[in-house]
Image (tube, rainbow, N blue to C red):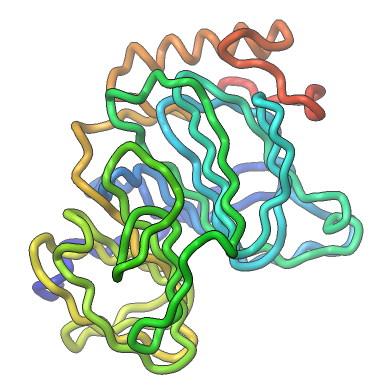
Length: 298
């Protein structure tokens, strides 16, 4: 391992059911989080033939924000707040679970009929302890509201936080870094130490070179803190920079629940069992327009 990379993480394949398989990067046994990023999945690229699609049935979350970002395809998001929106490439769906929310993700009807290619990232960012119990919320940020610019041979889009003099409109109560990049040509740039206390590069496609070593798509490179890091991306490389300030303590993850204390997860499990068996509750209401199915507690 070179001096500017503290850990290289290889993704592990996971089948989430409903025709939805992913490459899971975080959590990793030796690297539970990078900044507030506690969960990181890369799905696709996958082709769905006409009539096919994926269906992630209604399920609950607590203690986190889910962040969906697409390179190709479309996903219909519905949640217990009454949100019903289709996310497309370049936009950001930012769902804050807080005390509790229920949502589903499915192939939209037009794409299911016509077929589509799907490719994207889904991440969870842990809420700070002061915000674990806040009311749930949903924010959709269209692609044209996110700063996009060229920087030393790469096109950048700031999804959350601040980077390279640009700030995202996404609001999050903890210092965060989330930037999508694409190098159409050979790109060489510096990731300054000031970008974030904890930083990582995830390579969606292509290759990166750091200190003479080459890294391939599907790898997450966790960078050492406190140092400027020079990176070269081969033409066609795309990926993200992610991280932020070190979190205010470790997080427990069980199924779809994230919390700083196990008792919060234990209560959420009981509440979901009750909600799913009784048609919803104050904490975990049903999802309008998607009330016939749900994912039971494992």
